[in-house]
Image 1 (cartoon, helix red, strand yellow):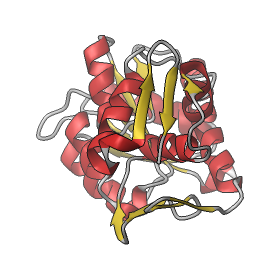
Image 2: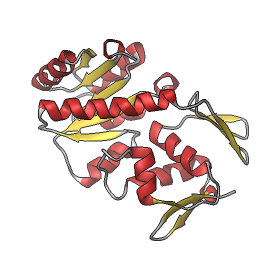
Image 3: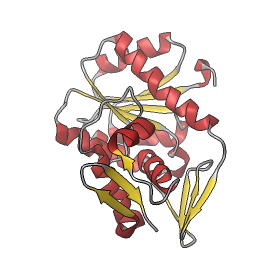
Image 4: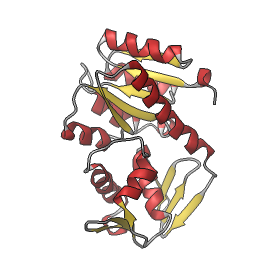
Length: 228
């Protein structure tokens, strides 16, 4: 996919942020659209179906956390990369962001060159996903369709946020194998992403709620495995 075909949606209530970030990403050749609050951002995301959404956390009308949760409920946006751009760097805010279905977390202020580099890294993940060989995996009563980002359990379709899907897909690819935390972070989040220590735990908890607690076993001090 060429840069001119990549659509990026910026959602922030600060005009200066929209202008600066938008200018630097436009200069790279990306298609840029903007929204000034969460409600407008969700509406534009549904209409434009961007490849990447950069969300502020603290916004009027609807904050970034709620906006991300709504975006993740739209099947057509399942493959869209979502990252937060915010001045809040506390661990609980990061956990809330990942819990809502975000792929990454960028703390501002951020230098333009660093921002562009981060965006390129995020979009590389999207490209890698698109190039992944189509694959349908069946484990027990669960069917994982990597091509369409769909999960079925007992014939009923489940909608999972991007990272929950990738984590489930990784663990279920080899039932019984213990995946170490470092391996999970590397394969699901990538080496270039710095995330809090609780990130994996948060996503596992969400999967247990949606898929079933018995499928996931914690190996204390090591990592997790998928069991049938």
